[in-house]
Length: 112
Length: 112
Image (tube, rainbow over the protein chains, first blue to last red):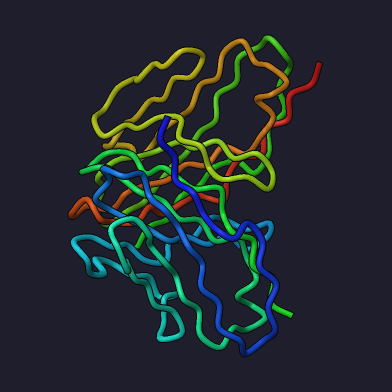
């Protein structure tokens, strides 16, 4: 069964550094998403991406964040100048047409 | 904006039935989802309702009343492995690229 994959599974970085989180969505899916979940809190929507551009973004997704689909398979989230409060689990999700969103296993980001 | 409420924690007995309720107040509505999340893992899709009524899928059923802003997830023949958090999420009206707004989740504890 096709699934969303994410790398790395864990990332530790120093405050102020840049990180890139990578995702490979399910191959025939058209919509791509990033969510985050701070430990013990709810899953929060960051951004959605369709037809090679951002479709929707939340208040959390400020200028510190950017997304890219550099080729036909990868979907990346870049966080510039990380802050302590960026420590969270970051989930990528993909969706075929107007169907269900399927989540990847997540990247646990720890900012020191 | 969206507001989604669900109980923080519930306890049930192995083999029994449990109903997890979710109420939502939204400016728009384009579907309600239930996900299961084990600690430290990604949300896993359980069910999707966009029209009023009951959707059944094996041991899991989900009900939606759009006029009441209400949904429930029914789990039958509970097993120990059903101990997890159950997340209610709403997709806002609009295009298929809309992100999901999640509730805080209901932590379900299954006792022998």
